[in-house]
Length: 394
Image 1: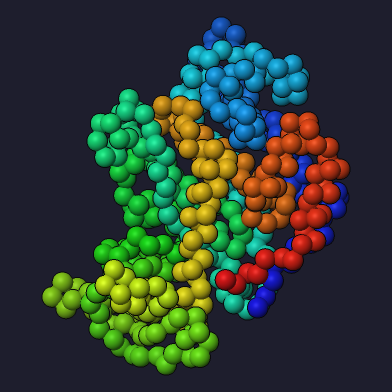
Image 2 (image 1 turned 180 degrees about the vertical axis):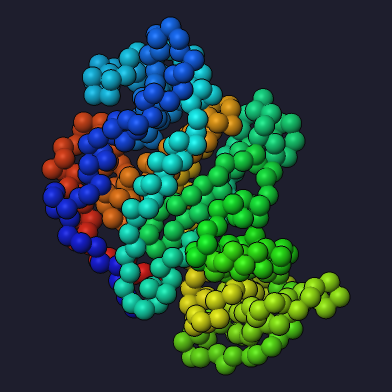
């Protein structure tokens, strides 16, 4: 079993430290954006300042609302460090519509490109580019008409995240109304050459072919009663059987002969036991489809297990960072908030070199609030890395 052993943590080899020392300059290039209509020259809240305030919101758990964010602008320390003037509640509310959220998305993707995988062993190297894609709801107010979900009284936005599993961070995100198709957003998030794992392709077999033609690698779950025709049966090795693999076949058709044509190229189907039972007491089996014919069957099972990383990330963003509470009612404002939440998570990952934890997040909050010194923060990180590193393989 391989272990993700990080480099020793000392002051001069913390590349992420620069981002926390210079929170403001991270957004400096956005300063003039959205000022074209300010002919009087009296604008006091600029894009870079608003983005910095959103970032501070996620690193100060005591700030839980837009009004609390407005109060933050009245503090002399915040004004002096970030050049922010006292800002009205109306100006903060307007900013969510004036400034283009897409520019923050560009900052997010630039930071995500700096994430480095922590690999050990051939099995981790084979899954280095694995990206889990899924969506999660953000409850919205009934008056947010664009956030269509169940009915007029139950509205929500949805963030669709592409999460790099072995690099411990998000690499892309889209934000839509709650009833938007996750398969449609998956099509927007995938990139040629990637390896994507998801659970939303159960009946959309055309999606599998689209991904293969892109081209990219994919691994998706289908229904247990799926129809298919076998081209070749692979023997299940002892290692694969230990990972729960029950069957490994190459397909010539996915779906019934009446409704689907022969596949232009073979796909692969792997059945994996979960160790659980269904409502009738029968063993529960996952049926996975992939175009990776080269992977060992146990790695296919492991890759799908890693899909849960994006679910844990949603819990982190919503329950720890506090992104469940929306600061804006506009679609653009919600996108800005989600983008900055993911930027905050990326900053932590870049600093500590691993997936963020609640304890480390608390320590960063203490540091940015002035309660902990930089030396105390580095000491915490050194202790964190001295502990037995987590295994890369579940």
